[in-house]
Amino acid sequence: MRITIVGTGYVGLTTGVCLANKGHEITCVDIDEKKIEKLNQGKEVIYEPGMKELLEEAIKNNKITFTTNYKEAYSKSKVIMVCVPTPENEDGSANLTYLDTAIKQIMENITQDCYIIVKSTVPVGTCEKISEKVKMSQFEIQVMFNPEFLSQGEAINNFMNPQRIVVGVETMKAKQIMEEIYQGFDCKKLFMDIKSAEISKYACNNFLALKLTYINEMANLCEKLNINIENVLKVMKTDKRIGSTYLEPGIGYGGSCLPKDTKALVNLAKENKVKLNTIEATIASNKEQRKKLIEKLDKCYENKKDLNVAVLGLSFKENTNDLRESQAIETIKELKGSVNKIIAYDNKETILNACRNLFKEEQSIHFSNDIKVALKDADVCMIFNKEKEILELSPDNFVDMMKEPIILDGKNCFDISEMNKDNIKYDSIGRNVDGMNEKWRII
Ligand SMILES: NC(=O)c1ccc[n+]([C@@H]2O[C@H](COP(=O)([O-])OP(=O)(O)OC[C@H]3O[C@@H](n4cnc5c(N)ncnc54)[C@H](O)[C@@H]3O)[C@@H](O)[C@H]2O)c1
Image (tube, rainbow, N blue to C red):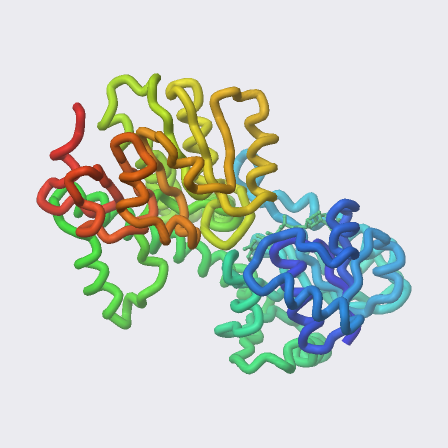
């Protein structure tokens, strides 16, 4: 099938290369000229494991093309999948400007009846409004909603091996189109009305945020009680009613989805005079959790002005180059000015360049793609994601490279029994067995 994909970000590009790999003819449209230029040269614009190979394969087989010429792209399309951003407005509601613009551009340029498949995450009723709007077109346009459930860092694998595909449709013809697009995917296809599909996406993301926040709060309590949260996790993860994923204690969720989708759902509920106490509490609790490493640092030092701090892992999670709502960036912003020097490590040049640009006025903040450079002579090391090079560090590496290693691990990367050596001061989330963290606190 010939499909045009609008927006070549994490969702659009993943959808494009995966559907091209399944044999469809894909045209990807974006308004970002630099991005399209790079893609036309076969270069990666986002980092996702497996993306480069699939992209090269699709280009080699002439299954995918990239363009900024949306007029031409829409004029020859019968099926258009929309994957543009839906960030948050100041009041937390979903900002639908990108979506509105894309729909307008589609309406102005199509030359035949077509199907618009919305993949962006949108509040309930959005597709209904689009359906109303497109009635003004001289062509018949059917709107469908097909939420995306991929997780960054595993996007290709998630898209190619979905647990289910959810589709909100109104007509049999639209259903047939979706069946054809996803013919090559061996999983349950859940067809339903559009509003149910719209709220299902929020229901899933909000539940994941709630689950992560619950385990973070449980970890905080365990830490106070000198209990190792890992023992609790062993019990919880083997309970099938609870499930074993999204139970990793840490410094709070970040990224481009959970923070905005929790706020958008609370907003939607408010508009409908419903109170979502659990999600409001999740948002507040996550905000607190994101300060955890700073709080731990403050417990070690009354005066931080001479400290050299190594920050490891800049993206909001490993295996992605997405800096949106990055816990590390937030922490660097908070620390700057109060410490002597910050050296931040990341293994991706795109991230380092974006950060160098973000902090270009700051003389005391440096970035390196060499983990050893970041750790060399550091007083404190703060860890923000589970990138491979971070997990590969041994206790001796910290001892050899840092002054007197104080390690504040926001992702529980290391075994406490290995790290709890005399010459290492190690603190993580929810693991203060026998008060080990208090023994070495300076104040
Ligand atoms: N990132 C994720 O993990 C994820 C997962 C599931 C769902 N979603 C949802 O999918 C949507 C897209 O998210 P994303 O992370 O891929 O966004 P993104 O910011 O990575 O990419 C969006 C792309 O759309 C382009 N764009 C904006 N307006 C356009 C227009 N009028 N025409 C053509 N291109 C246009 C931008 O230039 C950008 O390249 C959001 O609604 C998000 O909530 C994201």
